[in-house]
Length: 260
Ligand code: MN
Image (tube, rainbow, N blue to C red; front, side, top):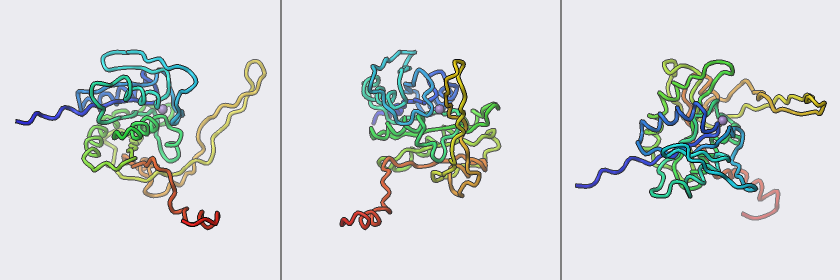
């Protein structure tokens, strides 16, 4: 008789840090899929770190429990160290990142450490899903929505033939689980007009700037992650690591006077 295939090995990480409530939500989501779950997450909040690597100082890995480690670096550092150093006896089958405190929609994906952890896994040719829970600042976060819909979405996307260089970006709407309308496959939207830059003087009279809230375009395109989550749908977006814009090739050939 053939041996039963072992449970998939899952690595989870995030950008909000090892103590973030969303990481606990993701641990519960992962536990519904496998009993071989490893956590390697940043010591501190790295939101907005993007796909940055720590190159100019050493990294410390702290064992924080059974199959649980904190790294004093970025989400990308965490995934790289997890896959090449920390977890060595058997390969990782799936990387889950999140659940982020707040959405990762539109151009957020270019700043997001949550997405970057999934990008790093994708570069290692490991399937990866990033998850984010939309919220309203100052109000309780509907983590139950991510927890209710997360496990099935992960199981379901794992049944598709996974294209090379692709990761999945999941955003849960800012509503209780019972108010969710369903799941939509979406494209990356666009909403950013600018950021509110707060310019003040520090207690010693020196000027500083603090990057504040995003100024949003209030009219999201249909079919985007932004429109879907606004309307109460879970948004699932396939993102591609190859950022080449092929439709520009012919215009560039012409502008540069070069042949294809
Ligand atoms: Mn974050």
